[in-house]
Amino acid sequence: MSGRRFEQILRVTCCSRPEAKGKDKIQPLIDLIISQCQSTFGPSKEAKGKDKIQPLIDLIISQCQSTFGPSKKLSLDESLLHFRGRLSFRVYIKGKKSRYGIKFFELTTSDGYLLNIEMYSGTTTNNDLHNTEALVLRLMKPYLLKGHELFMDNYYNSVDLSDKLLTLKTHANGTIRSNRKGNPKELINKKIRKGEHFWVRKKQVYVSKWKDKHDVLVITTRNHPRLITVKNKFGKEKIKPEEVSSYNDHMSGIDRLDQMTSAYSSPRKTIRLYKKVIFHLLDICV
Image (cartoon, rainbow, N blue to C red):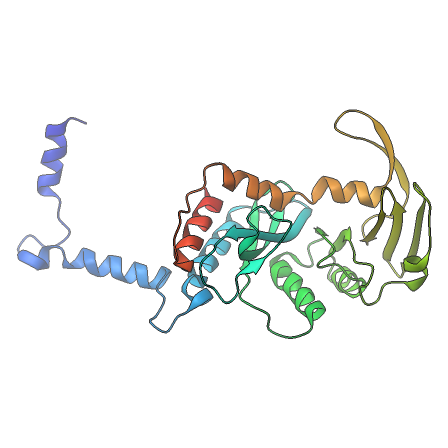
């Protein structure tokens, strides 16, 4: 539109009754904005740490889940938002690029669409295994009993968790730590040569060991362990267990999400936790 037309519209713009004067002309709009801000995201004066940002996280989760229904393959892992300010639950992860920061547990599709997210705010009990099982069930709650296949790394997986998920009609697949409680001792203690494949079963939960450069332990309720021929990105054929190949194909959802948000990231240096997280969540939404 022309500048003159804009000035005409601006001249007659009003949000109150015609007879209102002074402050009364704008007060209805102020009241509306205040009510929307308070209902959507309004931390009280007593709110601290995670509580200042939790209403916004809940809002984004509900929008993500209502907007898109995922396919069968889901992946669960942690993501790290770089933050060097003073924070009681700031974490250090050596393998991450940022190393220091705020940790998020994220559930995504295999191609990187966010379905659920939880911000780490410190340990609650001394039982790490119990914590990880409860975390997985919380993040997966909207998607249980629907036949999904969940891919996780060795931080989360255990025989008991896979059995629980299977009773909730959800398959699990991923690597597992050798010292995890409930692991079959026969498999853990067995020595195998490069290229060999060995597995054991408990009901419908399979734990397998395959030797590549190092021993690879995988737990699955999705595939019966067997060796198959696969091609790498250079077209070279290699023999791998089916459960390892499936894990490599579908576990990269969180990495894909981090890759997309890092290209044009909006967060800037700040000592305010909630400001950093707000802009990070904005990146995820975009």
